[in-house]
Amino acid sequence: MGSIVKSDKFRWFILIIVPVIYMNFYWYVGFNQSVIKMGIFVLSVLLLTRYFKEIFQKKSNTNDFSVFFKWFIIIILITHLTAYFVWEQSPILTFRATATMFALLYYYVLKEQKVTKEELIKIITSFAVTYVILWLFAVSQAPSVVFGQLDEINDNRGFFRVVGLPGLMLLLLFYFYALYKATSTSIINIKWTTLCVLSLIVVVLSLTRTIIIASLLITAIFLFRKRPLFVFVCSAVLYFGGEKLLRSNDVTSSLIELTEEQNEYAGKGELSARNEEYSLCFDFFPLHPITTLFGNGVSHKESEYGQRDEYLKEVYRFHRSDAGYVSLLITYGLLGLILYIWLLYKTYKMKVNKEFFFFKLFMFAFFIVNFTGDYYLKDAIPFILAVYGLELGIKQKKEI
Image (tube, one colour):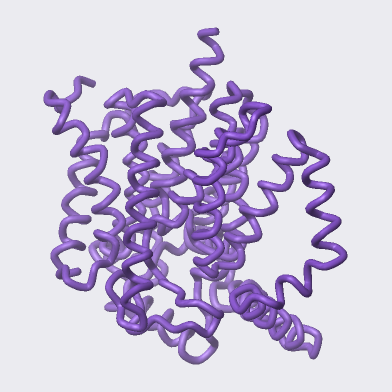
């Protein structure tokens, strides 16, 4: 397939604007979201048309990740039918509710434009810097909302939490890149160590516990392999004085108290919010041969299917977005879940050059985060960049 992009400037415009559109222009309150949503619909149709042959006619290469993207996009399209026949939701409403998932087509954009590793790093860095700038501005304007999806920003977790600002996972991807650069030599690299620490601070101040835990866990495992003495000392400090240190800080103290409160409810026989949503999934979405295989699809609030979801939120506090892989199962079926398991297995088994290893670190964190979130749905761009980076690592290793 010949590229339609001739100008280098226009090529970069495409590589940047496609993710920005799928990220709803960072949910800036000054933009008309109806117009942005229409842009997402049009872009999705254009990309589906552009890469129709890549998805439906061209044989997938089992050595790369095209199998995952091809079949997951096909499953997304099939859920338009399952939502119609099982829940009587029109395919048009399903497309409107599902359109952001077609961000997966950005994978084909990267392949068509033959993006190099250096260019990929530039894209990741640009989005990470953009996120930090927008996050700082959003915090400075709190409790007023400038970016994100809430009516007000509160500080009930010890700091202002900007909910719904896209790009946090892109910052996490940059963090793992900075971590690799900071530890790639035996001599401490001041520049990359500083960027690594600053990135982690912003990640922690996002106040999203699963992302914090995943990033710290993967970091600890990575550093233990490279600097076991350093990790041992840090672990000893945390073991003997960590709780007192963490409770002395408003942010970490609030997160600990919130976790303890949820554990207390669980100890009294009441399920925590996350566990409750996992357990109720199968009550609200009973097993059906078709939906078990292909999923129920995404609901739209203008349909009876969507109104049912809204009722479940209000009455039972059931949010699909908090149910992680169970939500993936009920939305995209057993086939969708199997594809993600295959993606995890392939990521684990593949061997790449060491300068591409940070992409694997991010992917492992990504899989952990999705146990209590739906980042596979709402934040596809970061993992697409990571997967494409792993493909580059495989190719370069073969060339060597």
